[in-house]
Structures are given as C-alpha cells and as structure tokens.
Image 1 (cartoon, one colour):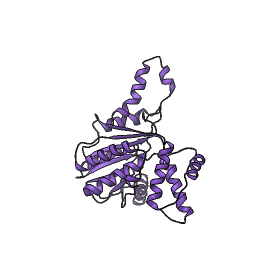
Image 2 (cartoon, one colour; image 1 turned 135 degrees about the horizontal axis):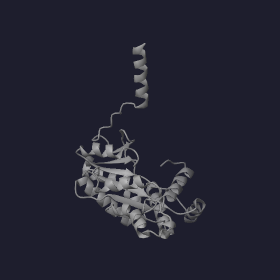
Image 3 (cartoon, helix red, strand yellow; image 1 turned 90 degrees about the horizontal axis):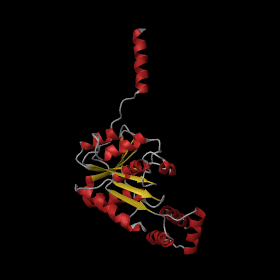
Image 4 (cartoon, helix red, strand yellow; image 1 turned 90 degrees about the vertical axis):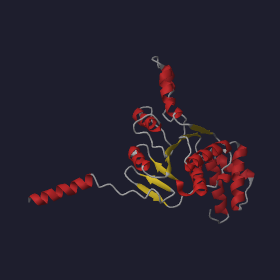
Length: 271
C-alpha cells in the first residue's frame, strides 16, 4: 500500500513539474524559438530580400550594419525598432540576420523569445556558446502598471547582475518608442511629473540604436509594390493598388505585400 501511494505521489509531481526538455544544439541552426525552458531550432530562416524592402533605406542600412558587426565579433548595439505597424521592423531583423549569415557563415543566429519566458535562463545558456546571438523580442509593450517587466528589461540591457552576455544583443520591436504605455495624466501629476515621464523613456534610452518607422507615403507604397511586382514578374495597375490601400485603411509595407499576394492569386501563381 505504501509503495503504491509513493508511486502515485511521484507521478503527480512529474505532472506538476515535468522534467526540463533538452534544448536544440546552439551551433546547428540559423534561428531558434525559446519557450522559456528550451529552444526549438528553425532549419530555414525566412526573410525578404533586402533590396525589395523599400521606403526604409536609412533604417535598413543601420540595422544591417549593426547585425554585421555582431556577426564579425565587433562591438554592436542593442536595437529598438519602433513605430508604425506593418513597416517591416521584424522582417528587417530577419533579413539582416540572413544577410550576415550569408556573409560570415554560421557565426550568428537569431533567437525569438518572450520577455516573460525565462530570459535569464536563455542568457545563461547562450553565454557559454562560441557563437553570437541576436535575441529578438517582437511587438513588445508593457502596461503602465507593469513596472517589474520594464525594470527587468532595463537590467538585462545594462547594469544588472543578470545583464545579457557579451556575445548576445537584444533586438526589440514595439509600436511605441517608450515601450511602456503612457498617459496624458502623467503630465498632471503634481509630484515630480518630469520624473514619471523620464522613467518611462529611460527604457528606450538603454538601446544604443533606436530607429523609428513611420507610415508609408504614397510614393513609398507604390515603390514597394513596383519592386515586388518586377521581382515576381507580375503586372499591376497603380489605380488598383491605391484602391487596395483605401480598402485596407492605410498604406504600409504589409499592405503592399498583401496586394502583391493578391496579384499573384489573380494570376494563378504562388509566391
């Protein structure tokens, strides 16, 4: 009876706290997804060709240069890519990493993670690997009440005992520069209102490279479509493209790509 009871207790404990899964080989893949306990290797890093990414020339040059430095083992910045949705922030990070891999072999890998999912454990694992890593936090944003999350990220960037290791750089995308949600009421706080705002912006200031992405102009939107259409050999009409953006409620690189996908579908082709 005692042995049966012990076996049931042991089984229950395993269900509550399953054993840690083995992580993927940190030298074997171009990209990984970290779930907080283990990494899953991604065999192929999908990214658009850099020359097809139009309307973000300055941002593209800065990101590609910085990721190339990291791949070469030179000094490189943590990056914050902030601004309008659909303007290629995440795609640019993937494309820049892929370009660095083509130029320098497997010296660098991209790791997509979540700030709430065991980043300290991830950094501990990566710090012991003879390879450079760009840890990618996509679409990051903290509620105004979430001070602990923002504080952890500040500590990881610099100054904390668990700061990211020397062979790792962070790349964060966000729809707002401050990352932490802000309200107009901050300006009305009678007690040190400037301190409240400064604390919100302090997180963004920890990134050595902060790049804004803004909504497409009409010319940029059409140039993006023209580049993709030429690359894939698709016929298109400017008026039709503009009508598509009106129906979608705005112009962006994402809307342009969706239009190109529509063109391919009309032509009975895949992309």
